[in-house]
Image 1 (cartoon, rainbow, N blue to C red):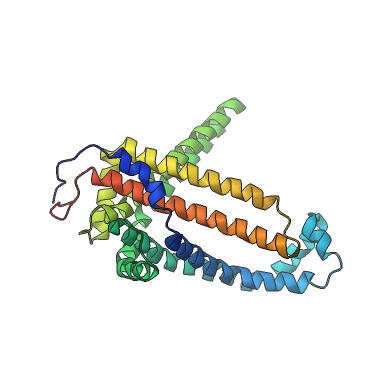
Image 2: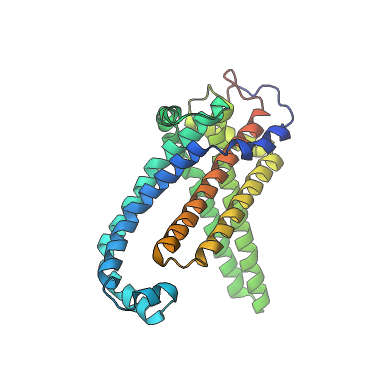
Length: 300
């Protein structure tokens, strides 16, 4: 299989991807899935904190102002329940890993349809695509492992140069270069994997996760500017929105019913912003992938 004749990237379609990602049903399912996974880890922690703090006369004061002594005492008390809390955290992470192929499958189903789907269609699409998305998640271990290896090698090299440096500024420069290089490597790996995932949207006939990984790599090599521009721009916008909501959440005192509800709402809006970012990225990267002429008769 080979690519059909390539064409220019349709930047108009790419620009519409963030708006196409504003699908409230898809975002709601994303929110509920992440909320359930979070609750698995949060409920045991809340029970432990409740046993420690609920009967204290200083509870409202601690909720309004940080108290270092209280924090250290609570940390010591929670350390005695390390096994329970650690197990809950692992269970939450495992559940989220099992959710991800289903969530990605719903995004793929929506992207392929090119329209807003109902709840039943999204759930069915996620289940249909679950196997392929799960295999792709397993295949993505390779680029992430390779990126981790390169990052570790770069940091080790920077440490060696720092040990041999005669000036502190030389050691600092080596560390800065290593960290910048690490960031670039991580972005390239993530853009590769996201492009591979988006290739399932670009080509409705694609079934193989390994071929999707090859297509993602080819897209990154043949459309490096468009792919990285889309990835970085939408990632920056998504994180900027999440950061703004996070700052609002930090400055919200969750005391009383209204404060608690407002704090919870802001937290969930952060999750929605990150989910929107992920969906918009996949839709936009799929539009970039379509410019390479991928189709059923192509070998890659």
